[in-house]
Length: 246
Image 1 (cartoon, one colour):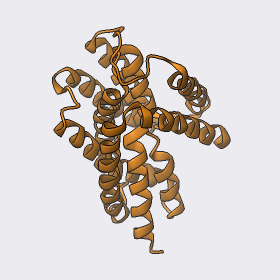
Image 2 (image 1 turned 180 degrees about the horizontal axis):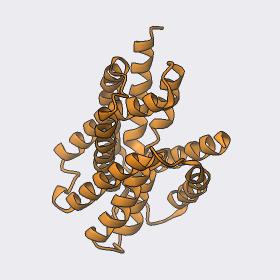
Image 3 (image 1 turned 90 degrees about the vertical axis):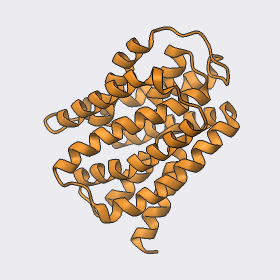
């Protein structure tokens, strides 16, 4: 099969999975490395095509009224700034220590989503203000996404459920908004270095757009019944991938 068509199909599947539970980068980054890109170009190209997936999902959620943009804007700004700082930092520091810690955190989060009664289609009690959430989760997870990446969507979703009391559908919708902000920030810095392979990024972006639109539609239609198992599987998959890699 033609390389472009293969990457388009890979990105479509990744966009679908990412819109539901995150973890799409586990599919697209290895595919880009397989296509012959060096690691830096693979990461940059992944951010370029990922912007379209997270953007499509965000747009769909917004059009259907699943996003509260007035309350979400501080988290969007903090996520953008955090991701920018993370992307700059990764140029100077390695990610080995984070690579060892993240699998353990993701496994813990997977267990939380699997057994916690708080994870449902009903909103629950919030534990912090929107501004505190923006500063803690937006900046922190945004930095992590710019610096390292795998499992970002899981961290955002877990934060929305556990700290702001969002139901799982609402958490997933707002997670894609923050994913879009962090992807865009990282992409802008990668663009300045000319690292994006646009010949591959553009067909993958088309696949991401289609897959993300389908995934966002499924989230709003099926809620917790669909999101919970996919989120748990995505968290475990990221953990296994990172543990095996180390």
